[in-house]
Length: 341
Ligand SMILES: Nc1ncnc2c1ncn2[C@@H]1O[C@H](COP(=O)(O)OP(=O)(O)OP(=O)(O)O)[C@@H](O)[C@H]1O
Image (cartoon, rainbow, N blue to C red; front, side, top):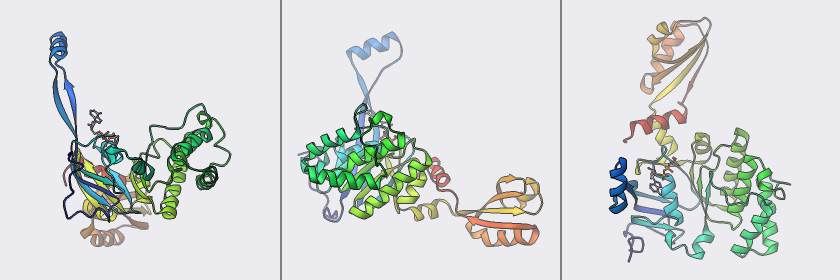
């Protein structure tokens, strides 16, 4: 019996969680070669390997209908985790269940319940109209003609893809292609969506389109979504909860607000002054992030906020003042740099 087939710890309720990872690890063996001819020769006769610990003891549970952001810097182990959750990669150790199934067995019932969309890979055939690929998908999943037309009609409308499915995929814009990919990935009405960078490379309008669609789809079908994205706007627009990994290990699992609260106990104070003032003089009031003409931005610790703002208002000729939360990108960037929670 493999580790995945062994019983899960009793405290884990597989009926409550639609996605469940328990102490999930994946180590990739990679051959190590010494430089030079000698190295090449000895590599040929006797290979030595080292382990890349892509994912280490990661545990989390996701309940049906949640939309969860999965964050981490490059190489953190996000794609490897998604591959284990969809059964494309066999875990080195740990347990995983998705919709009650052990993913790597790739049972038909399991495959009907999940989908994996990777922004940098496409399933639609390049030279054919998307509709042709959709018909193949419909045949694979045994979707009747009537149901096929209904689903395609509905998704086409939700994705604003009217008139696009009969053009060769290579003639579509990047945004339209991504939307058509989503349509193909959702034709079988999966309950669980694993989305790896679904807005990668898209322009802002197309990003917003995909985001709006995902929100609508989640609400309409109560689908569960685990989403990775380098665009924080995707995460803030869609996810109340985020899971963060770094160097393969879990760093944070909780609300997005909680993450910002925990890692950004400061605010940005933007002021518009009546006259230009030198950066040197402004430094008296706090860390100066930027100064451009009469506008300045200060970074102020939360507990000093009231004092600092009242001092700025009483000392300086202020035309406008705003207190903002720091941009999520910056906070996440600082968390990744800090490395350890
Ligand atoms: N098939 C493989 N063989 C060896 N090492 C691998 C393999 N796949 C991934 N890795 C390594 O495992 C680590 C995690 O990779 P993974 O692709 O899961 O990260 P990621 O968080 O998705 O990164 P990114 O945001 O850059 O896509 C990296 O160090 C990567 O080089």
